Length: 151
Image (tube, rainbow, N blue to C red; front, top):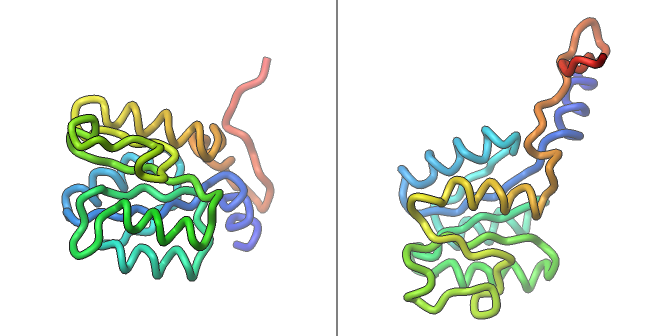
């Protein structure tokens, strides 16, 4: 069992997902898990900040609109802990709100809507590497077996 855990840890990436909406959490969690990420969710900025300060995450994905404290305030708290942590901010109509990387402190600002999944997938690949999209090799008899065929 230890061997299985270590192989999965080698191939997956940990993501902290912060969103107020239950629907948003479930939908985005599914996208991230389909990309091979291990996802921890938080329903608000305070919970997200507490989780980030207590754990290591390879990536943070947060909504702009959160209860009590918005995503930009959460990003500021995370930046006080780690200046290098990759952060993606999701917002409805970010251009109209004047939200961009420079004004928010995020590595990427993605608009919610039609292209969100494609943009989020590209950003995940960019900030935590393409390895996140690979599934771990199958385990059989205590050894790893790749499912890829070689010629």
